[in-house]
Amino acid sequence: MGIYPSDPEFLRPMVEPINMVIWFGMKTTIDLPDELLIEAKKRAAEQRRPLRALVEEGLRTVLKKPERRKQKTQVRLVTAKGGLASDLDVSSREAMYEWLQKKR
Image (cartoon, rainbow, N blue to C red; front, side, top):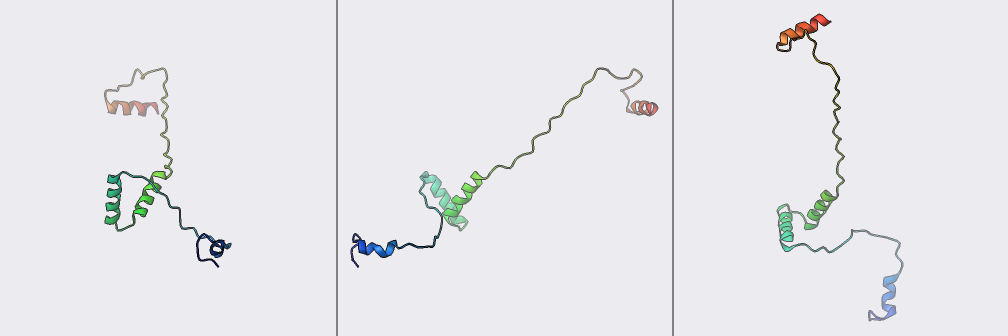
């Protein structure tokens, strides 16, 4: 077995097929303004949690599907030709109640 990394014999044991997959999550790099990163690090420290957790929570919040709001019910106004009965006195509530009692 070779002792140099460029030697094919050196790499052979490292390229043997492995029947196991371990998934730890994806790593990526993002560019943030310095002041935003500083503020995020401070907030993570205040909450005693890793910056990764703060960023993950923020992304999940932004990407969360909005809840469907119930659409407002349209009120359809019904109009009809006509008017008030000629013997109805609308200036007095008692007179209107009496008028309704007579009509029943």
